Length: 425
Ligand SMILES: Nc1nc2c(ncn2[C@@H]2O[C@H](COP(=O)(O)OP(=O)(O)OP(=O)(O)O)[C@@H](O)[C@H]2O)c(=O)[nH]1
Image: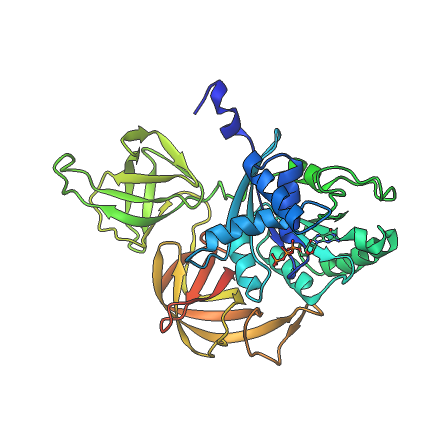
């Protein structure tokens, strides 16, 4: 879209996720961001003000806003991550809002895998908890570029600089052991509104930016790998329709890189090569396409290609790894422990196959952030380095060069539950 009307659509988009323990104030914070940036609708606002008055609250209860929206979405179905959209004149935002109950690892992994920033809330009265460390660790594992530690409920600790500094020191200790690049600290009160959107006049000792200023101004680097073309085939469009008797296309979403008409591609696993005849998007033909577009590609030669195959560029520097033995960091989020040498279903891009967890190398001790080689029992919320063997070759990259082709999930075939997410090392 172009022209004057496209201003909103062209605005930069920041995706962020919020994490914290139960009652750290996530709902209140999101409500405060929406309320103070005037991003909520008038009718919702009046309803909240009325409801808050009824309960005799002094401040508008902003958690009612988020919780209300959450409840709406949760009717009938269990949704773990609710996505919320809002905009300021500077940027558009998508918040992946994940409830802080016990399955927090799973929620955070689901909500955060595409995030540019993670807000981790710490209750000023409680300081850094095991869960805070785990959230920070997961954020760094997922390579979320920016981490913002909000020390919340500063109003309950007399806006004390010392409390804030102590928490900041504890967290800096944690951050130094992680590969987190950009970690910021903001003392806030979500309830009162200090340093969320407007600057607090009760914390003169804090000279840094407000949370909203950070969200509006941090640099959004693209997560998408623009170099290596990876096209996992999702569907084969067969030449059978009356209108397009000759059309044989391969539909899918470009996971990374770009492709031009006329370029030579190689099909994995067969290894056959051909030239791109056309790239189609609905009824339009494109000269080129790039990640994360969903398109349909036709080739000049008739090659046997099926779902789960991958098109890559013939001369594109690094090709994907092809193999059945995979090393990964696994976040486990099921009540039932990982079964050593157990068989699971692995899902990777558009393929699914069986695999066996052949080895657990170590488990992360979240309190010390050290590797534990002795206790290798992997249960709910554990993070471990494991080794898998798949029944067929996988075409993969490491997570740090390609988030899409570098991540997998494991499914328990018996219960059909997603039991873990993994980042390929
Ligand atoms: N005094 C004070 N109370 C706060 C602040 N932020 C949140 N609260 C209160 O803390 C309680 C929990 O806040 P919520 O926003 O519901 O917490 P949450 O993290 O969203 O909880 P879950 O969504 O259930 O995980 C509520 O009673 C809030 O009013 C704050 O900055 N100061």
